[in-house]
Amino acid sequence: MASYFEELNVDENELPGSLVERLTRESFRMIFDYDPESYGDVINSQRSPPASKSEIEKLRIPSVDEILGEQCQICLCQYQVDDKALVMPCHHIFHDSCLKKWLKKSNFCPLCKSELKTDDELYELYKEEMKKKRLRDDSIAQLHDSMFG
Image (tube, rainbow, N blue to C red):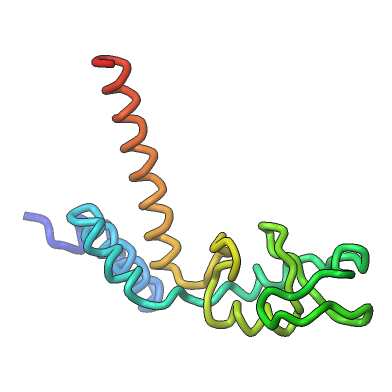
């Protein structure tokens, strides 16, 4: 009978950090495959992780025309000509300092909840697995409808 490590093809010469990371990912997949909803409850009961610093750096700066006459939806102050602002991928605009403070605590837009990537590997893996599960469920529903609908 093969050991747990042989079944996962774990090489004893792997660096300890990468070994732990790999076992964590494999453990996550085993738990997720067994009961994805209960794992989602654990993820969703926690606060969302902060946005990745690289994602924050990718945010574009809006033109002056885009912000004049508008207000930041976080602090509710009108934009001034010399204010620094950032545009989320969902096209919502916020003061630079307001948005960066927000994204240090959570990874989503304060208005529409569209998410930025995080540095939390398990959170990203969970989102990826849930997306695959929804696609599988949709495919099964379409197949069922085509056969019996």
